[in-house]
Image 1 (cartoon, rainbow over the protein chains, first blue to last red):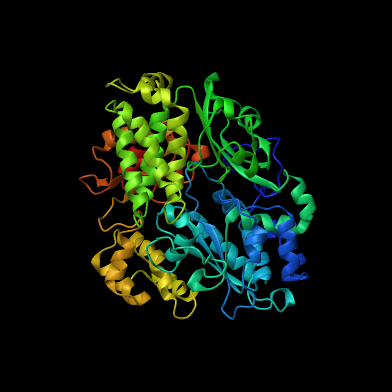
Image 2: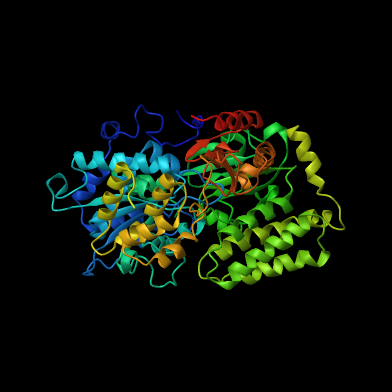
Amino acid sequence: MLYNEPHPLEVKILTKRFGLPNSASIDTFLATEGYKGFEKALTMTPDAIINEVKASGLRGRGGAGFSTGMKWSFLPRNSPKPKYIMVNADESEPGTCKDRLLIEYDPHSLIEGMLIAALAAGSNLGYIYIRGEYRYLIDIMDRAIVEARERGFLGNNIKGSEFSFDCHTHSGAGAYECGEESALLESFEGKRGIPRIRPPFPAVAGAYQCPTVLNNVETFCSAPPILLMGAQAYAGLGTPKNGGTRLFCLSGHINKPGVYELPMGFPLMRMIEEVGGGMRGGKKLKAVIPGGSSCPVLKADECDVLMDFDSLAAAQSMLGSGGVVVMDEDTCMVKAALRIMRFYAHESCGWCIPCREGTTWLKKLLTRFHEGMGQRSDIILIGDLAKNMLGRTFCPLGDAAALPTISIVEKFTEEFEAHLEGRPCPYEHASQLVRA
Amino acid sequence: MTFSPEMEARFAAMLLKYPEGRQRSALVPMLLYAQDEVGAVTPEVVNEVARRVGVDPLQVDEVLTYYSMLHRQKWGRKHLQICTNISCLLVGGEELWHQACKKLGIGHREVTADGEISLEEVECIGACSWAPAIQVNYDFYHNVTPEKLDELIDTMGKKS
């Protein structure tokens, strides 16, 4: 059973097997062009595969949006060290619930994506780092790996070729920070998930200090369709420099929340009004987090934007991980900022001081504010504190905490003012009425 | 210390997943699975896992305190986890949290007097489009209403 009804505007590339009977089985996979992209890659040189992925305009679906083909090209293929393929399935960015579906409904497409990356990298071994809370996905993935071995898509001399590859699942145990690539690698090696200083990047010194291709689940799953349909056709689905489709996770105050596969560059307002069925209860739109909780918030009048990496960067926000969180007129933005900061304060690994202290102090300030104990000078202090974190931390978690805070305090200053002088939150009453 | 035959088989396979000399990689998953069986990461579990992956028990302690799913304290037979992060918050996750606290008479990371149920306010569990969401042990419950939560807690209390 699907979690939500598909929408006619969807372009089903990555989700084409969602809803098929036994969609996770290798038989369903093989009957629907499964492993055909890999078989094509088997006939190509590593450079040709990398060039194809580059030309497709595929950009990392984990959040950073870096060119996948470029990332693969940084791997020193002549290094005498083993090369590893590492899948980041530590999906934990608030607002994001897409990788879960890809593994649940189509685990073989992830294996196929890893195989293609392995051919390009000259790798024989890969791992899938799955967040601990997704235990059922580890079981699904393990079954798929066994099936792939039985049918000769994993193991030695795959399909009579010179190429050998195998992969395994690896469970996390609850840590947002482990979705950051270098922290993930530390965690994978059996340590605390503390980020590494970069460079060197994982392409050069990743798992066990060996060259490693590290991408998000959805990024790997995009490789088979690129090989199958060709880079040009795939790129043409999206906007310039933003190839293909991606999974958008719609949540919040809309009538039809759900995960929908739409072309890159799909307009945000159409996403809310048509795909998402419009605002719940006929309420007015107040704000949207366009790509997971670490992105600067867009005000309603800024939502006339295309959902690709470059358009959102031009709008001074980010496409991030595709988590679109929609907030209506009854939402207290001070409370939203506080809840987001509570998350980052909890998840800060504590390794570097601007993040550890910054998130904790911002949480305290926002808590005080929401309780009506804030002072006018705190409004400036919150913004200053957050801005002082930007670019001063080991890993992007500091920025991830600061950016939404800065955007909320600057764009919704009047809501902070409304909480001053001991006044109760003006939205508590409204929200209780809605839920009564 | 030994685990159930199924868990022993899992651990044997787990150690073989990683390249020779890299068995420390099994540390975090082994702790989590051991905890599932024992109910907590006890000092015995720490020593045993340390021995199996070839590190010092102190190094296990160091790792264990980092991960929010790992705990030294024994949880209830049913561990109720309620997400109140942004997507859930917007559609009633916080109200569910208060409802559960009140109904069970316990707070964050506490256990009922009979040891049956424990409660935790958790961060995003990756169910944002089907919010509000909760997890009981590893099972997901989506689009949870106050009525559904009430019913769920009532059935959780009954020994299965």
